[in-house]
Image 1 (cartoon, one colour):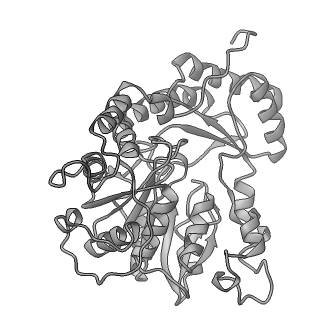
Image 2 (cartoon, rainbow, N blue to C red):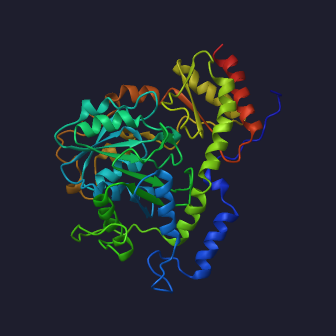
Image 3 (cartoon, rainbow, N blue to C red):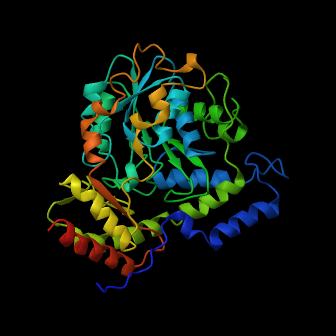
Length: 412
């Protein structure tokens, strides 16, 4: 590696792949003057974008039913409500997760029960047996940053106890596990098309399931309790009407998401190719392990995790990588839930709605840093190396060479 620094490559996945395909589909919506999914100028011919996105996502995931909504967070709230989650219920969810993974559970009136992660940085399947109670109704697994949870173990442990399995695929559309798309393993799954995701429309989400009742309830929850003829043509309604929210996706958002979905495999292969070049250089460095990937053939490949045996080496290594213009991070937008203000206060928007209101002390055991020694340890030991759509082979080689160079300086 020469002494000259390469410019920092531009990070990002689907957002940087936006091009003429997205433009053409958006212009189609605008030219037809039909931005609302359920009706437009011709009552007999509903606008096609959201419906097409749902069909193509359904086929891509390998699942029977898909419902597009306004965001990944909306998808989580709809999914939880669709399985009947409510006051008195508990959901086991990793302590290491995004904001919505916790808040969506609280929003439907249930209580998040935090669990440890393992060396995959995902839900540790053994935590189900440790944390299940008579009030547990579901487990929520987050496929963190392009690596799938060990879903065979999760499904076996959860279904044996009669629990729903909710797959949060927000960060990892395109990731597979044992030859199957994530989202096809559990009872209901959610996806996000937010700006930072593998495919984006700026803001959007999707609920996927193979269960007709969950699908119908999700539709009603997303559309003010309505169940329109379009959905009745997919699943005959059986549920009585109930109050729902308004989480519909627009035709404009769907147009962008649809074009992005059609690029997802291309983005994935690009990231995997560059990841492989980096891994060839950094695998086996003394004192540095890699994040355990249960199925290396299914990893999306957009982030490499260097796990340091010596915690004191993390900060100087990170500083030196930054000095060489290598994009890297000690956090990736995800933090331990117990460090968030909304957990520290234990509040919902009204005191009576907090699932923690009856605890005599707060934060209670199970919601403090000292209750999660493994999560605390693992998440302080890594440096994440992102790989983006605009990264080149030369960028990948530079990243690998930089890691090797700094390893000599910091780790001996």
